Amino acid sequence: MRAAKVETRFTKMFNIDYPIISAPMFLVSSVETVVATGQAGGLGAFPAFNYRPIENYAKAIKDIKSQSSAPFAINIIVQSSNKFLEQHIEHALENEVPMIITSLGGPKEVIKRAEGTKTKIFCNVVGLEHAKKVADLGADGLISAGAGAGGHAGETSPFALIPYLKKHVDLPLIAAGSIVDGKGMAAALALGADAIYMGTRFIASKESTVDQDYKNAIINAHPQDIVNTAQVDGFPGNFIRTPLLEKMGIEPGLIESLASHNKKVKRAISLFRAGKSLLAPDKTKVSYKTVYSAGHGVAMIDEILSADEIIQNTVNEYRQLLQNLPK
Ligand SMILES: Cc1cc2nc3c(=O)[nH]c(=O)nc-3n(C[C@H](O)[C@H](O)[C@H](O)COP(=O)(O)O)c2cc1C
Image (cartoon, rainbow, N blue to C red; front, side, top):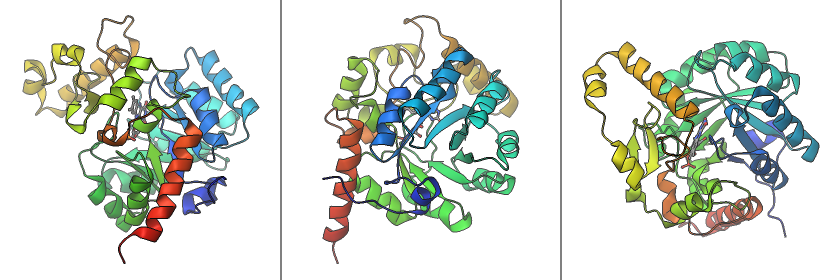
């Protein structure tokens, strides 16, 4: 039997059964993961850049809509280095995509463009300053990327970041970082979150189309195997330690170290690396194609499950915990 609904400010906003989002992941999330998450009662997300050229992006949106009526989200890089920003926004708004998630940059333009439409704008933030800024711009919600998350993680523990943001900014908040089961869900909601993001957990899902090696690496990794480095794409992110990652060098090189005090030079190096990583043509270069990003949550992932199993297990465990916590 399917678990009963868990109602929060987030589920009411999107009219879904559970406050669980399969997080957008570069080269991982797909039409398949989005549709499966939506059918399982959660909300699926994918990065616009997973579908290139633009025609494939437009087709992905149509494919999702034709296979499922569940709401879903598109993650858009809102930095000016995204040459396709205009088209990414336009296709999402034209198709009334229920949610846009912004990352790496200022969301002012996309928030303005979405005004008066059915699309809600949620912004990735790693601290209070950024959260207040996007709230003032009119964002509909926040995603707190805490330390230990897969991809570009923040530096603050989710235990501090979630209640801190919640205390100062009155917007629906999605908690991200090492949440893989009902225990994480219960903790995040207790800290004040309105929904949870699961990234790493969904890499090891049946619907995820990544190599079996990547899925196995998630299952076999321990938290101490996760290293935080800016060497892959210029921004600090979490990756599984592998021989290729070690060969590339996890520590910053001389140029990065010298530039670390100059914000502009540091940013220029980051953008250069990000571009190089995004466009890396073959399997020998270090990029998201050849190294495995994952968060500390690998600790508790030991089998490949379907999106439906992940969501049902999480909600059932969450409910049980609520009854069994020490009184
Ligand atoms: C392989 C990988 C790729 C990611 N790519 C993106 C991305 O393109 N855009 C984005 O906003 N977040 C990206 N993230 C971050 C996730 O959306 C999410 O914040 C994170 O996975 C949550 O932490 P968890 O992995 O511990 O569950 C990525 C994460 C991973 C693991």
